[in-house]
Length: 454
Image (cartoon, rainbow, N blue to C red):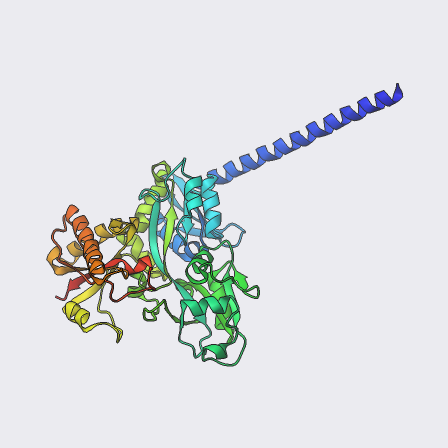
């Protein structure tokens, strides 16, 4: 009898312990949910994600937005956590605060998906898996959800005294994978190369991995990893053997290298090459929202970021604005005489039209650039006849086909401009000549915009 009672008591104890553990677990979960709700409620808006966007650009855009909204100064304070800022002001009878948490692009997606963030700041486009996972709430690839707020060039950085001036994308892949491990192999000093790279949560790392490593190379285990672009750049600038990559706004005291892709000439990132996305390591900086479901304040902030005023702040922050500018390009020696003749009475605008899929469907950035171009013409008191749209194609099986594709692209942009009242802009196609990237790259398929000299 005693063993049975003992066994019964043990069973009761086990049941009580199990119940207690479940209760503690549920209580902890409840506390977590409440804490998250309180944290979300603590701010009128939360932006999570990319350090590239969140370190300087997002706070500047938030400040500009709050200055329009509020009646006094915009205050900035930390949260006690590195790479987080709270910006606040007084509007009417209440305080408004916005949190910017810059811990990497992937963290921003997770925060948006879990309703902790209203805006996801990202230095890379949304991945197919992310688009699919959030598909029941919003289409992250739609014009309502995907917002290109700036253009950036992935800067390849070395010590100021390093004699190397340019590298190909393939050389960069070999360097960062350890296959090229001494500067003497590149015409530099006889010393081992030291690698500096962004961390795995960074959209800058995702971009580098996609554009440079490209599935062919793996980052060498000796690379030092960083959450901050600025810290990485500062460390490279002090290391004669160092090479690293960061956002264009974080060059600081490091030396910037020119980069080539395939048979295209090497380019340094600048206003024209980055804004037009001709520079091979150019990239778009994004803010993602849940479209029409996003809070009104989130939509207003996005509208401000995309406005001329917001884009002026983009330029001030060190990134490249999407407001069109007219520039007289410095042609490389390889530019054909026929193209020099075609454009001799024109300046180039810092906008390229690119395509989402197929050959003629404009992507989300291009759809907004149509309106920017219309605004630019009105501001400058210019007409559609002052423009020249030049289409380009990637190499096709036959030269005639390349010419046809390039003209179709130019016609597609012309039609889109017609629809918004910029009618009958002159156009031409230039076939597969003057590639800006290796053969097969979608970046070669583009429409450049030129404007007549006054």
